[in-house]
Amino acid sequence: MSNDGPSILEGIETLRRQFTDGLNRVLPEELTTRAVPQLDAAFTSLLEKFQLVPREEFEQYLALLNRLGSEVEELSQRVAQLESVESVSMAPAADDPRGRGSRNQAEGEDKTGPA
Image (cartoon, rainbow, N blue to C red; front, top):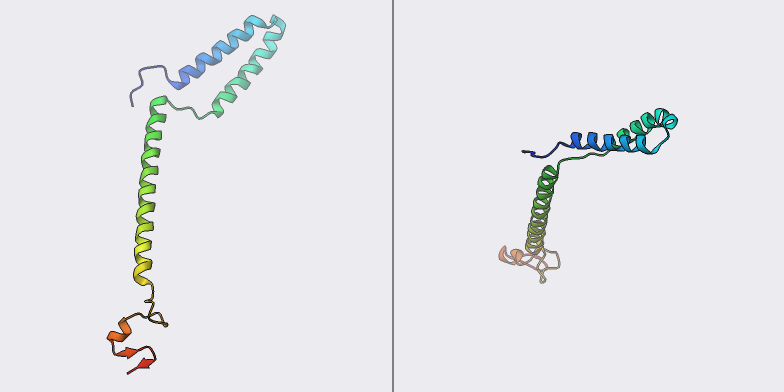
């Protein structure tokens, strides 16, 4: 994966710096010396909790997820189709109360027992 733009970490560092610089501009100096390091640490901690990835990597994973979802759907349909074929072939014949179908008649048995 090539990445022509800034890395995620560089972007986070730039954002953190902008946040700190903004606080330094708007807060009084006595508050800045105490609050800015604490707010900076809190901001950095919050950003580290996000699991950020480059857009290119995200799009690759999204494409993979979509492809796998399609494959799962196709396989589910095939399984359902195979199950319906299997259930039809294993169903008892309507003329056999014992559920053994016409196979018994071919073996010389009638519906009441052996011949």
